[in-house]
Image (cartoon, rainbow, N blue to C red; front, side, top):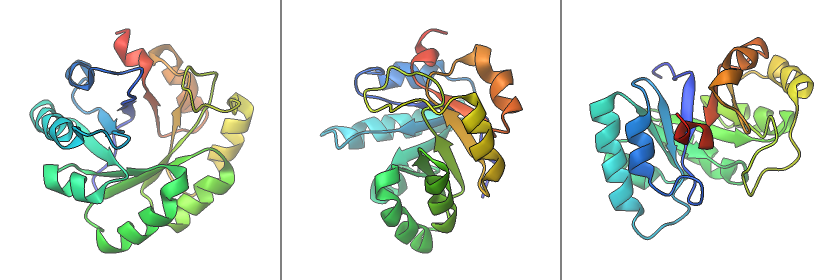
Length: 184
């Protein structure tokens, strides 16, 4: 497995409607998780993102779609927590791909490790505008969870570049953002 970036961007249909513009803003060496949520034009969007990833030096993961990831030459697949069992099956057949998982608790991180994931995104750390965000974990709880994890853990939820140093002090391998990329 190649080493993973410290910084990541996640797409979101409501908060990042122009994913090409988002990808173009990212500095080289950043990771991008394309969450297509079953969009009709996902193949076209994924192909555009894969081209940008190659030309701009980004690491591209496609959410929950092995076939699409392989078709466009993405680096791997990101699995929502609810689809981790599919991710575990995919890991067995696609060892060449990077695989990450979403996690919202220590137990989910353990399941991701058992499923053979390369890393996990723990969320939400702080209050977030995400429609799916639950109660934030907070800094103390995040540090405790990360300290027990056997996987590299990236933070997501309510983060921006000003919080990067603080996130490293929690033991995180890096962080992911959505809206903060649009404000750069």
